[in-house]
Image (cartoon, rainbow, N blue to C red):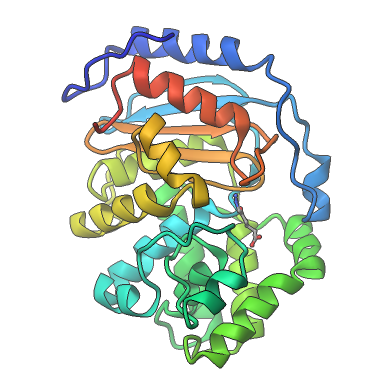
Length: 318
Ligand code: DON
């Protein structure tokens, strides 16, 4: 049992944060549960023992432990930030109307969820909703749309992000399911652009390389009401940061979102390469990297570390 720190207006002091991060790392590094994703062939090569944590406050204060600088592909975590950028560009009403904000209760790549909901992807955090959201980024051309996404995610991270071409190509060879989802969306009149081109762009956005440190900066930008606390640059408006955090609370951890909110009490997003970002509004964000996943596709060590740190640091919203 971890003593629950009362949720107050600020993080504990830096020394205490560093100490708790080290404790979380020591506690969960020995865990051997979970399986590294292999449906994207290249991801199967990830080292299951790598484990890194980064916590960044809204004042930019940074504490890190373990493999916080290891590169990995952002995967589904991109969905949160692309949603924010599209809301910033066209307003959340348009995205709400086309995509929705309710949990599907079904796996992230479910085709059945689309069929059961008459073609509504339900929310921007599942593959169908993310593909629809990427297509809504306004631009004059495909290249301009991609640059709006890559450049926008880079502003969240405070550095220029680049695609891991090997992961992108590996997923493009095997992503038949996402192609089917895009075609189905088109059939339901919810994708007005070329489905193949949009799946290509969505796959690229998922293959952008980040570290646990980058995830913490990106999350801290949302915690800070849209201003990157490291660069000082406003990336999105305050209301967009709020919109994004609400959708993450209900849908960020897929069909496990309710349990996650119950146990950990923070908006968060996971990706199949083992990343998790958890955000404590007004305080900061935790970035975690550990490749072995549970059956819903969420990092096992990352979840345990978030639960421990949420309690010990008093991050929990409730
Ligand atoms: O579309 C996919 O299946 C991957 N590019 C991303 C999925 C993902 O990260 C789900 N996360 N837990």
